[in-house]
Image 1 (cartoon, rainbow, N blue to C red):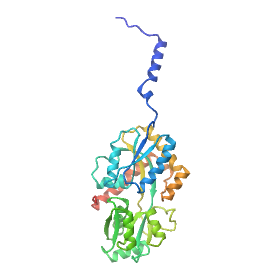
Image 2 (image 1 turned 60 degrees about the vertical axis):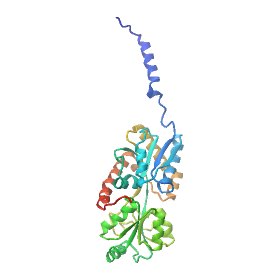
Image 3 (image 1 turned 180 degrees about the vertical axis):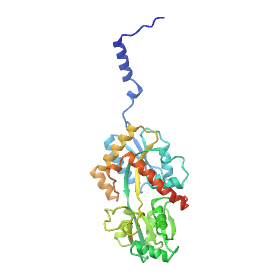
Image 4 (image 1 turned 90 degrees about the vertical axis):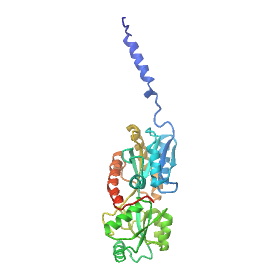
Length: 329
């Protein structure tokens, strides 16, 4: 049977109509509905207000609601698992920090791989940590503290919050690097731990700077060092741990934003641009600074920079966690 050919003009019209009505052409531009950011901790922690400030600016840029969903438990691993199971379409994102996206993976059983099951969007902020001592401790600086601890091995105590968290790892690494020994006393929250340092029930604590700074300024505890590579804008007279005499002890309480593995690269690029815009907005920056946050320089806010930094953090801290036999509380 002879095959009848259509004229070239009609073929061109059909092809044009086909393109116009293909599923990809009809797909709604991203985003066309609300976006959810899963925060793996309860409301009130440091990650929660940070994420809400960023989400507010994202909403203004994207023209869609950006909802923060708190899913807490198991060092943040439950919330991270919730995000890992989500469709890779850019509508469910994972906010996290060095507790949920580094420490938890080495301490808690997880149904996901924190590196391979997510694609990075952007690093968010760093929150400096302070090493503080009870006023009952006779040491006035880090060198004196090390000498006092070596004179009284296993007699001093330190409050720690969260297995595998920066507050925990700060103290474990301090012991390793300074060859000192003291008891680690677990607490469920930073406020309770700080109160016992103030009251002299425990001697030391490494915690979020903004939570401890009011007690330092009021003279209720003695701040020995900021655990960062550079001085903190909120306490510029406080030396870094390296300046205080112990290089190599810095630790960052950092945060970032990820999407489930398989999220299209154009969506990741769009989200990265929006997050970077949020972090450069003057009003948002001021609100973040009021909470003690430091924003990394622009070259560290790319997806590739977060991927490299995240891997480096896991390679650094997981061996320390395992060597110290840190277990879930």
